[in-house]
Amino acid sequence: MAIRRILTIDNAADLATLKKISTPVEAVTDEVRALMDDMLETMYDAPGIGLAAVQIGEPVRIIVMDLAREGEEPAPRYFVNPELFDPSEELFVYEEGCLSVPEYFDAVERPARIKVRYLNYQGEPVVEEAEGLFAVCIQHEMDHLEGVLFIDHLSRLRRDRAMAKAKKVRRVA
Picture (cartoon, helix red, strand yellow):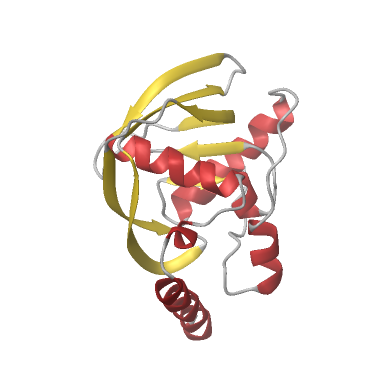
């Protein structure tokens, strides 16, 4: 396992990659599992609760996530070729952040519940309903697979503010 560099919006080349639509994975192989292991280690190191493969420069349809709270046993989840369907009409607003948009948080409105279909770490098909933080996180990470950042859901003023903050964070680092 290896910690990979997370692409950020303040770098033009990174931003171009983050805007790519990710391609499907043909099969869950040992190589794919190694990528997911790297992604999970990278996400924990950041620290974060979700990471899409494109965020480490691999534009393929893979997401890792761990919603365990501090002090709880880790609960890693792996999503290969995820698809969202049957969103609820009820909406939920959550203050989101993103490892690719450093130190910026803002409220985003999304469906409160949604179903997700994917292959797990072993390549087995899974269908489940997501709600609460799980629903927010899976929709946020799915956006990455479509080349969409959470700041794309915001007004132009707020997007510009996020870009300026990311550039400032980079200068300070």
